[in-house]
Image 1 (cartoon, rainbow, N blue to C red):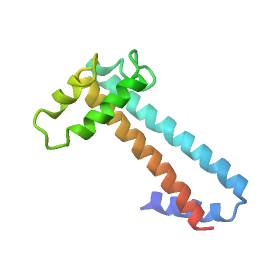
Image 2: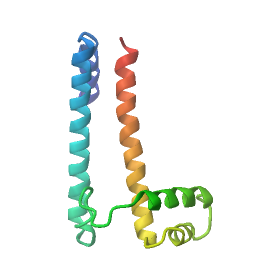
Image 3: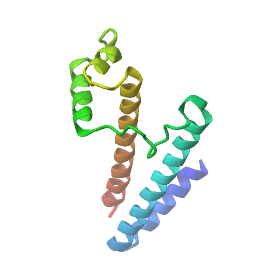
Length: 129
């Protein structure tokens, strides 16, 4: 795959750079990843008329720290195999619907994946020093 070869070549070239240059390149790569990822998510939201106003960064009703805490606790309380799991989770977060909770969960999963991917990239570059 040409993309994989390109990534491998760039990684090898990064090994030859000084640490400050590596940090700057990693920072720019992560910013580009976030920008590209958010653009793709926003495009998907705009393509679905019922969700066109729910693009990341445009949330008209952001989650509070308390709501986040309640959601996380409910996710632990009601494991994946729980019947009517999302209804029960939503019932523990006042003012939030089943759909709100599911959407927030998906956003959190994406954030964790993005953070892990960025960390993996940093670890890969560091391990090749």
